[in-house]
Image 1: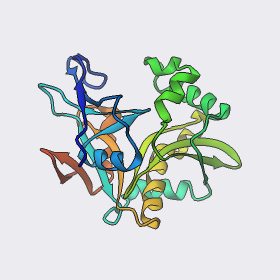
Image 2: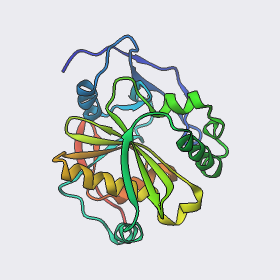
Image 3: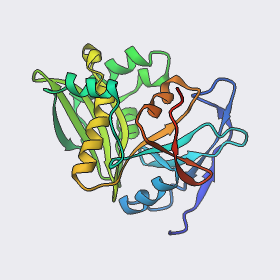
Length: 235
C-alpha cells in the first residue's frame, strides 16, 4: 500500500459518548486521494466525510468499530424482511452526486426532526455539499420514491470491491417506511448483483443508540485489533 501521511487531531468532546474525549487520524489534505486508494483505506478502518478521510484514534477508548457486511453471507432478519415488503413498490433511481435543491430541502427537514439539537440542523448549502460530496470519490445519490413522490436519498460511494453507505436521509412524512433500513438492504442487493463483496456501514458504537443499530445486519464484520471478525449479536 502507498505510504500515506497522517495527522492527529487535538482531543475534543466526543459526539457519541458523553464524557469521552475523541481524536482522529486524518489523511493529510496535501495527499492526492483517488477511488482506488480509498478502496484500500476503507478496508483499514478509514471513512470519508466530504473530501476528508479519517479514522478514530482515541487514546483511552476503542468503542468505535469499523463495520461491513459480506453481502454473500447476509440474511435479512424478520424485521428487515418486513421492511422489504413495506417497500415493495418503492422505486430507486441512481443519479450523479450533484446538488439538487429538492434533496437539500428534504435533508434540512430530516435534520430538524431527527437532529434538532445538533449543528447539522443549521446546515448551509455549502455544509451539505462539503459533507456528502467529494471531488475524487465515485459517489452517487440514490433517490427513493414512494407513490411518485421523492421520499429519501441514500448517498453511496462505489468502490473497487464494495459499496460504502455514506449517509441516508428521508422526508419525515415517510418515517413509517423505515427508509434508513431499506437503503442498507437495497445497497446489499446492489453490491451482490454487481459482484461486489462488501457494504461498509461506517462505525458501530455499542453504547450509542444512534450507532448501535448496525449490529442488526448479521453477520456483521468488525475491524478489531486490525483484523476483520464477525461481531456477535447479543440477545
